[in-house]
Length: 169
Image 1 (cartoon, rainbow, N blue to C red):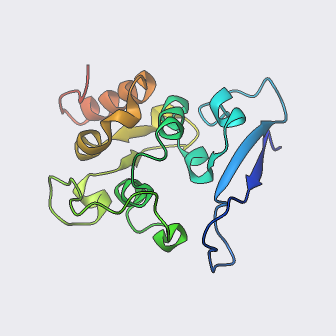
Image 2: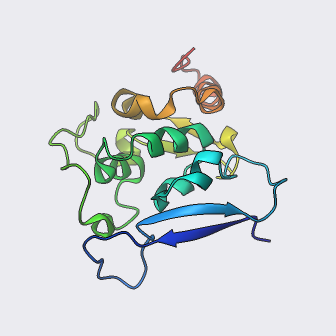
C-alpha cells in the first residue's frame, strides 16, 4: 500500500540524458494522514518543492535540515560521502555548488563505507534505530543531524554494542 504520493516538479535546467533518474524537484502529498514512521513525509516536505533524493533519508529532521539549506551545499559531495559509488552521481550533472576539493575524510581516500564517511545501515531502512552516523560524516555534515536525537541515540547504541564510546551525548 502506498502511503504517500511524490509529485515531480520539472524545474528549468539542463536535461538529464538517462532513462531513470530522480525528478529534479518534488513535493509529497500524503494519502493517509495516520501514516507513521521515520520515512513519513514532514510538513516541510509536503509544502516545499525540494530535491527528491532527500525524501529517501531516514530521519525526518535531517530531511528538513537539508531542505532548509539545499542551496548552500554540494549535493554531489553529500551523496558521495553518504553512499559512495552506489548511485550514479552523473544524475546530478549541474550541482548547486561546485564539488569541494577536500573529501573531509579522516581515513584517506578509500571507498565511503570502508573509510567511514557515511551512514551505516544495520537493519530495516525505515527504522531510525537501524542507522549509525560515522565520525567522518559527523565532522563534515554535522549540521544535517542537528536535533536528530533518534539518530544520535541509534548511533550511540551501535557504537556501544561494539565497545566504542558514544559519538555524541
